Image (cartoon, rainbow, N blue to C red):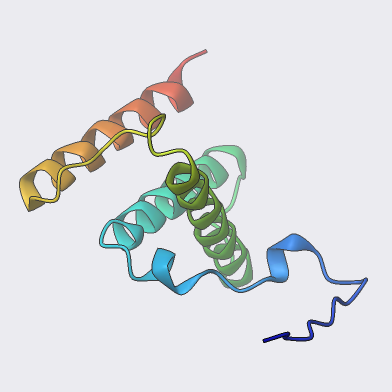
Length: 109
């Protein structure tokens, strides 16, 4: 069946809804939280004052959108993405390794 879709010319890619299968993925909340806290730490290192509530909301939305798009790209190319085993310990260790890599990348001169 044909479904008509209206594309608004003023709408950009970031205003599209995140696919539900991404939101239901078991690693999505952890990855989004990790990304948000990394962005928040970067902001606090750069800015002289703590982030305001609207700035925090913007950082959260950016983290959610970037993690969702990264996960979509990983699902399109599963052979190039790291395969995370489904057991909780492996997920936790993979998350810790990801945080460690990001902190090293942020602190590197």
